[in-house]
Length: 431
Ligand SMILES: NC(=O)c1ccc[n+]([C@@H]2O[C@H](COP(=O)([O-])OP(=O)(O)OC[C@H]3O[C@@H](n4cnc5c(N)ncnc54)[C@H](O)[C@@H]3O)[C@@H](O)[C@H]2O)c1
Ligand SMILES: O=c1ccn([C@@H]2O[C@H](COP(=O)(O)OP(=O)(O)O[C@H]3O[C@H](CO)[C@@H](O)[C@H](O)[C@H]3O)[C@@H](O)[C@H]2O)c(=O)[nH]1
Image 1 (cartoon, rainbow, N blue to C red):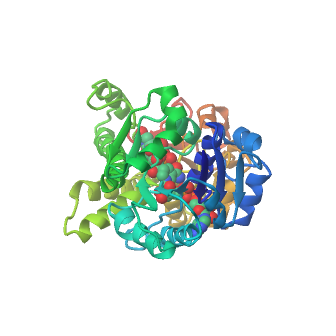
Image 2: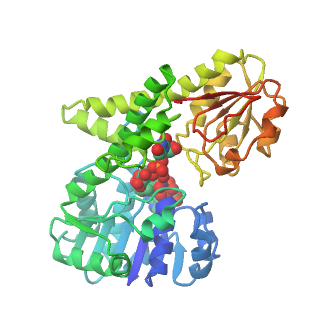
Image 3: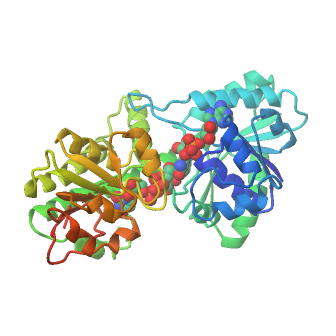
């Protein structure tokens, strides 16, 4: 099939490369000329395991990129993978989505035959039907449901394992309100993947499809906050929260995943998506207490980490190492990383921050140019009066004698990645 993907960031590039790998002809459209040039040259514009080989194999061939929306006319289906960031009050900013919908509509005005537009981005329930579809109708002069269709197909991939998550998903959600033409086209798009992995396909309404994405992320974020809440109790009573988590995870109703307590959740999705659905609920007159508490607790974890450091060291004027800057291992993404409030808290205390991350340093340098960035963990630890561990990169698990070079070997671990041993003053956040 001929597919187009509007927006070539984390999701757009990953799904475009994966669609090409499934045998489709794919064109991505992005306003960023550097991204477009990179893809056509066979270079992945983002850091994601497994993406480079696919972009290198298909880039400029079965996978093409352009800044020109008219390329959509040569395709059957267009996926919208544009950003949906948060406004200051937490509500969803639909600016890019609306601009994209209008541009798609303008180009569809000149297209003969049916076209399917698929909303891949995470949007609050009602957006597709009430906001995007009317914009496409207006700009194209065509009638939705007749000359074109608009479906919802949320994405559940994680950063750091996006390619595997897309290729072997737990489920595929198709929100079409029963539109048979839309369902047929989407079935054709995903056929190679569904056939290979026997993936469950959820056929549902568009509002339900949109809500499923928020419910999925809200549940996972709240699960981590609950495990952090329990972990904080454990810490007060000298109980190992990880032993507790392992045992409760054996109950199928709880499940063993997402029980790692620590400094909390960050990233491009959980913070903005919980904020957006809370705000959306408020607009309807409902205050969701559990979700609000999940966010509040998450906001408190970095300060709890720093207060453990305070218990052992007066950091004012001292060098403090921050190990890990990305919001999770396997990515250079620092959006809402817990390292941000941790660095801010250390700066408020007057510490001299020396940070290290295997891949996210350059991104964090833009956010905190005044911080010193080390080339390696041992360089960050050398002479430090304390260290806080924020991201569970594998290489931190191998650190050992590097701690001996610290001025005072106080190690506050926010991710249970460092081995506790004699000679270091070790504090786990929840154990
Ligand atoms: N990042 C993830 O792991 C993930 C996973 C699931 C769902 N999502 C959702 O997918 C959507 C996209 O997220 P992302 O992380 O890929 O965003 P991103 O910021 O990485 O990428 C968005 C891309 O869109 C481009 N763009 C902006 N305005 C444009 C326009 N008018 N026309 C064409 N291109 C334009 C930008 O240049 C950028 O390359 C969001 O709704 C997000 O919530 C993200
Ligand atoms: O037990 C755990 C698991 C995760 N985290 C933290 O939670 C955050 C998010 O992690 P993860 O969910 O693995 O990464 P994301 O790439 O943000 O993926 C989430 O957000 C995406 C965007 O919506 C969804 O598509 C995914 O399904 C959803 O898992 C990170 O800061 C992790 O450190 C924990 O603290 N403890």
